[in-house]
Image (cartoon, rainbow, N blue to C red):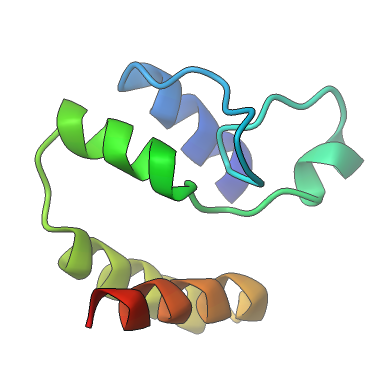
Length: 88
């Protein structure tokens, strides 16, 4: 549900389907395909989102990391932590 909601909200902010990376904005045709994608936007889609709605990327990643940790979404937690480390 998180991936589908995030994907559809991305469309609401004007982001099209992503073909550049494993990304929440990838188009999917069935649930197993959706499950294989990340619950986060790739760097390109994050840039598109940032140009659409200005936000503090570090704050956003901290909040995502905290959410993933609380929900025990360990794969996504690891990726959010990697993204945060890149910003340091």
